[in-house]
Image (tube, helix red, strand yellow):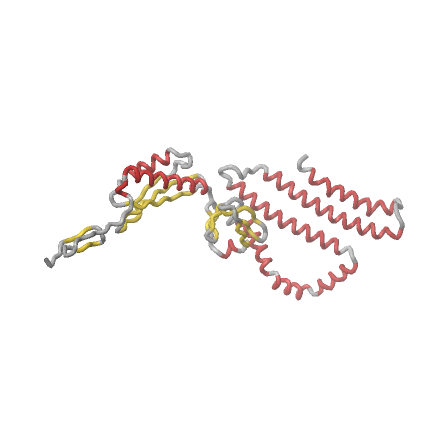
Length: 321
């Protein structure tokens, strides 16, 4: 019943068009001079109602089919794939139906029909002119069709575009809307995804690795830090229990760089997990190893005292003494 409602108006319009086109003249409801007018109006309404019915049928079929696929589920890759394809193909078919309907309505008038024949005779020149004038639009439409077929992006994909992190909110034939994490919308032409590189964090799956960098002094206990990372991860539901690694990734003159690597079910969860782990590791260092926090050493020596400073870490005897 919920799908039948969308057919009520176009069916009613179709019945009115049939009445105007076939029954007005048959049963002499009006003057004979007005028959051509009612016939033309009936033809226009019939074309519009049929186009409307086709569009409603297309949308109803799409909704019935997509009800089987839940994009709210965790593993929704297949659902998002079908959502993307159906949305773009729906736009293509609706555009074709509207163009054909407008053309059929215009062909009902003799003057327009004669003009169409003239344009058709010069279609080569007109096609070149239109091609140059609308090449960007045509390119965007073709790119939209390519997105539907090759699917470099899908609805609800997590992407990084122009340095902005967000989700694919809408895909049309000519442009894509990205919902940025702070609720802004980034509108990108469809051709962008075939001309410039971008990051797609959910191309094959939603799970992702998150990293946290901690900078400490050389005196830190890496084993204790590794144990604390495991304890923090096991205590939070944000972690998917797949990856738990702590590595020393760099050593510089003023301290060391420690990287904590962890996994989560999707990128928003990974962000929350990274923030949580970073906070807990810093608190752990503050409480248990305050001497291991990053510091800069400065050597101060009295005037005339022999010795030279090396790298700010200590001194060596003056060999000239």
